[in-house]
Image (cartoon, rainbow, N blue to C red; front, side, top):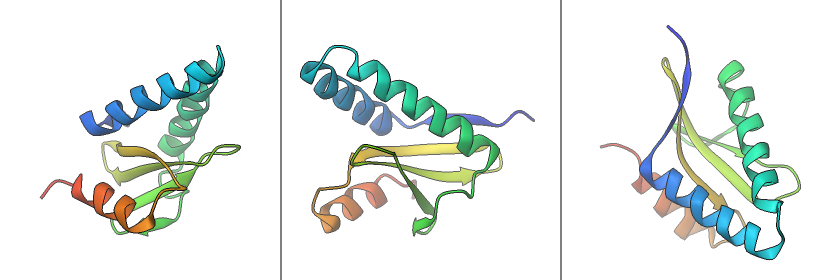
Length: 104
């Protein structure tokens, strides 16, 4: 079975919002952000346990040169991205938001 990257609707909304913010600051930065995130997800498909545990079962990959974290859950079918967030936020609100996105 081919492993895949599955984006939750909330993670897609995060990515769209971040793209718009970054692109508004300077043309082309949004595309660079998407490229960086795509490279990270390809790497995680090969090495799903690469990023450290953040709050089980969620892992967090910190993106280079950015204050962003890619939050995901490794599964047999691939990785499920549950969010992309600015890590400079209040840690408790970030924790509450990301853990609230996990399926019950």
